[in-house]
Image 1 (spheres, rainbow, N blue to C red):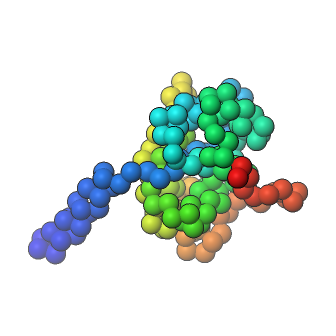
Image 2 (image 1 turned 90 degrees about the horizontal axis):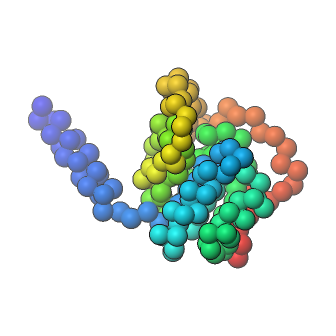
Length: 184
C-alpha cells in the first residue's frame, strides 16, 4: 500500500496538469459521410478557437473540405490536410510526428460520437507515445457506438506501431500527391 501511494499521487498530478493545459491545435479524424458532418461541426467549433491550427486526416476530398471552412469564414492558412491515412490507426500514426515537430502537446480530438471510444484508445497510445494529450470533442450522430472489438483490435495495432512502426494497414499508392497540404 505504501508503494501505491506515490503512484496514485503521480496519476493525480498528471490529471490536474491535463485540466490546466489548453489545446494548441485541432485534430479531426476524417471519414464522415457525404454530408460532411465532421468538417461542418469542426468549422463551427474552430470559430470559437480562432488561433488554433486545424489538422484534418483523411476524409472528404480537399476541395469539399476547403469549401466548408471557407463558407464558415475560417482562414484557409489554418488548414493542414493529410490524406496518407487509410484507417483510424493511420489517422494518428500519419500525423503524430508532425504534431510533435510543431511543438504541439495537446489537441482537441474531433470525431463522430460513435467512433470516439476507438479513437480515444488509439489516441492514448499513439499520441501518448509522443507526449501529446487530447481533449475529446464528439460530433453528434444517430449511429450506435462501434463494437468494443474494434477498439481492442485497433488498440493492439497501435501498440504494435509504437513498438515496431508497423500499422498493419494496407498502404495504397498515393500517386505522388503531397502528404500534407497546407495553405501558407
